[in-house]
Length: 199
Image (cartoon, rainbow, N blue to C red):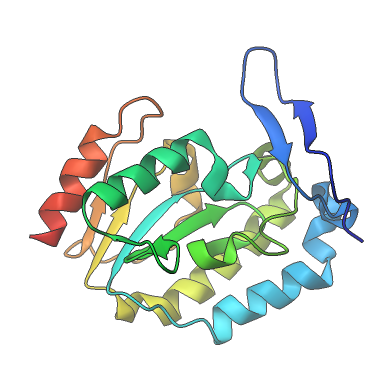
């Protein structure tokens, strides 16, 4: 069941971003989301069937705003991709493999971020940090997905807060992986790096 209509909003903490989910599925709130069949089907799809379309991957964090592309940071990144000619205006999607790193879903391709379960859950990162079982569950999903999709990429750009590094799959190829220092107010370094990778 999906709650349609008004935006779901709660304060995360005093002075921090507010959570915004346009269409929330009640079964995808908190720890119980990890047992939901929509989530498990998504994991299975990513591990066994997902096929990247592009040979450059950009990995960014998920967002407490759902769908992710509507968050302030992701709107900035979309602007970067547009300026660099990496945006398909007709299909409304990036021309590189933009993957969000989610504490619940693992890797979420941009095109999948608009549909359930990616658009409709609320699982704060501290839930995974506090529960060892959930941490290893999502870590396994990320590892198994990465083993299959990594060979598709010639270059991987990782733009994540430091706290997400522990979730990244082991064995990232240093020769094709670039880490960009994450900063919510300064994305110029990311734009310069993406431009450099293109040339």
